Length: 125
Image (cartoon, rainbow, N blue to C red; front, side):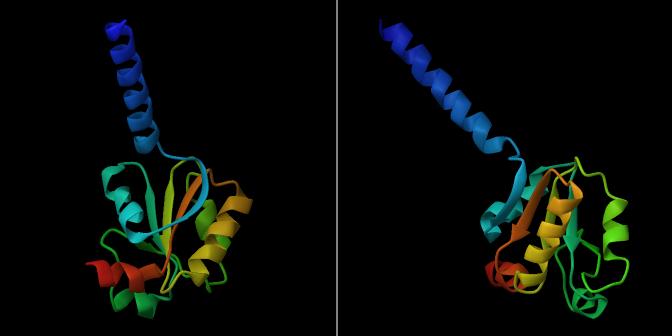
């Protein structure tokens, strides 16, 4: 009986661990600590939707700049694989929330928006 209970507990612990490391599909606004998990994922896009001038003033390492205000914003997004998780941020979270909705409407499967944007990220570094 003890072996059965121990097996059951280990099975539940494994399921919880797997769920925590599995990418959740959908659109999510997350805090800095959860957003940082992108570093552990090899296939992903990290997108900074601020203007080029904002990007030049500082950005998260490895981020690609796709300006939310550019005329070809959607066309640039169309070049991305919609099955690959996207991590998106802006200055404080407003533009990236709108960009996340656009991406969701375009059919992107998994999108993470940084709550508080680059300002929040900078404060945690």
